[in-house]
Length: 113
Length: 113
Image (cartoon, rainbow over all chains, first blue to last red; front, side):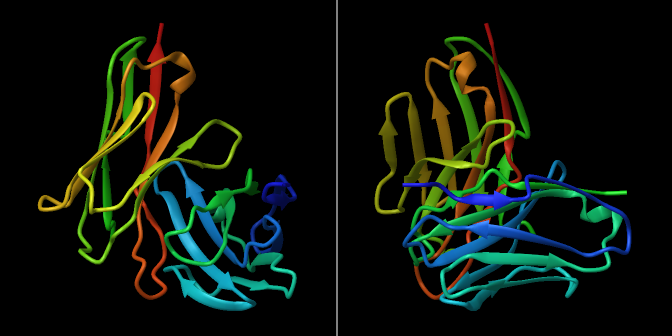
């Protein structure tokens, strides 16, 4: 069974631009969560989608948004990029419940110049 | 607000030694405590998990100890090997409602020969 895939793997943008990251979960998984990983903050939860609905949201500004499609694929969008948005963005999928194992993708490394 | 406090943030252990990483949580609603292992360039992967109805769980060289009254849990890696060098994250979640998985800040473990 294929794992979680994320595209693109690397991205370089400049301040003020916007970016869209994509995540394809493991087949059959209905929950997709997004995390921001930085050296000083660890894994920070962005949001979780389940059956096309945002079920949970972390403490990030409205510039960070996401959506999930009927095939469970998910995208996250960051508008008006800031230097501090440079991070590894990880997507994780699971069957459904909070205590199900989360399977992470390799991440998208975003650099904002 | 860091709901799961993890220490130390970095750890150097000699080959064959015991690596110990500690975590403490605040939310008494947490009832699932997984540990994730992350190698450079990869997403985190589930290593071992425990629920509060047991005080210890062992899988090979990896053991989780859980102290419900102290709201603490720890990961012990016995006979540490250079291949164990990675970043380890503790996490916690609640099976009730739709609460997110909360991660600790991570511990970078280096096992030296």
